[in-house]
Length: 266
Image (cartoon, rainbow, N blue to C red; front, side, top):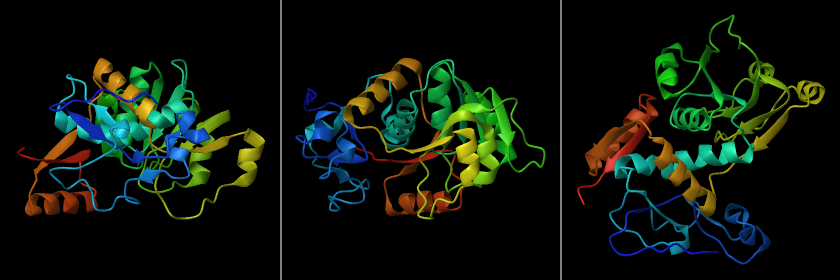
């Protein structure tokens, strides 16, 4: 693995995976997230979290932030940005593809931007009709609200990214995907997967899970975001107990547009 040249004073970030054995087959292939000894946020190194002024991390899993990306906007790219870019990369998206994004939220608003800047025709799919204006501003060329009884796409999509807060009604979304198409699951939901089995079989539709980007792809994502001005829409809160409580309450109420950033005075 080629280690980045990081020096004192550099701006860096870290993502979902912050360690691996760096010697196994998966690590040698640049797929550190699949290492049997992977270290993932929320599962390992629990003495270090995001609500902190300092941290100690493995240099191989730190990412230099391009000068064109402000720190506050770069922060959500470390998780949400890496997640959607990895999903698009894993789906082998091409500029000629018609890509659907289900959910215009913290993940979805970045997925729309990345897919649009890759040259794709982007369809935003939501259960909330008031997201259409934002979706269009992010780069969507078509918007469909599933809450509408007559909701329908102009034509099916080649790939559909699940970027909502929970699993969808699979009977409603499978018809959105063309025969031979792909559904990429990013949603974190502990419920069992229950899909209309014969709809998958008869239409040759694939469902593929996706984790955030491994280090090399993470750095590529940051370069792409810098080059194409892919920036999250954020709300900032002070790095205080009251500021964190306010951010968490707004997040739980579903009122965040679209990522919260706890801004330190350091």
